[in-house]
Amino acid sequence: MTIRVLLADDQALLRSAFKVLVNSEPDMEVVGEAADGAQAVALARSERADVVLMDIRMPGTDGLAATRMITADPELSAVRIVMLTTFEVDEYVVQSLRAGASGFLGKGAEPEELLGAIRIAHAGEALLSPAATKGLIATFLAQGPGADVVGDGGRGRTERLAALTAREREVLVLVAGGLSNDEIAERLDVSPLTVKTHVNRAMAKLGARDRAQLVVTAYESGLVRPRVE
Image (cartoon, rainbow, N blue to C red; front, top):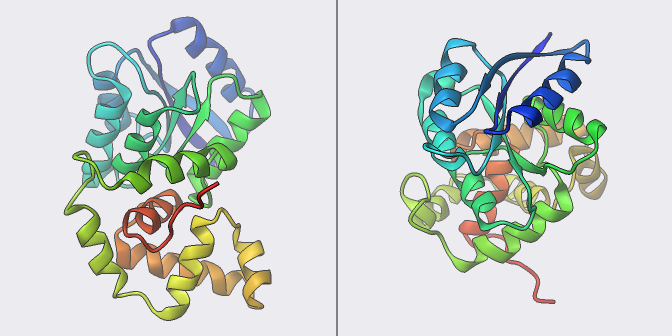
């Protein structure tokens, strides 16, 4: 199955470099290029993109607004968004995760890291740039839900946690800790398939698009709290 990738960045040279890289892979193809967020939303619809590499800062409709538009559209529920940023420690990144992005990657990432990020986002298996992402979530989400939180905010998220079983809550805590399914399986002495089932059920009950949204929910609901260094 070929992963259909959409590039959204106002720098034409950067888009060209990404295009060459992505098209060099047998399991990927670039299906469109956008210079701003509005174009990205339109192309996500018309080109049936699977993954959008979305720059945060663009003229006009920026990447954050475009992410909100895409994740709010039921017809684009399968689209995964990877935010691209010059600085990995950026509050806009957390706002993007709250808006529904699957994760983020610094523009200075190695080619293999970028390609891996696309595949990971497409699979919905894990957050991208794990160490930096976990740090961002601990720093910003712990400050409490902001005005940009989709839906009914932290209180609604907390109420929805009541629908989880004890095991699903336990798995959610470990997911928020950055553990993979295999690592969680080893920790709980169960099979990876069992862990995947618990993760999928938690996502369904919490209305999470992917694993990244589970982490956001875990922090915003207070189920997981950042460690104070």
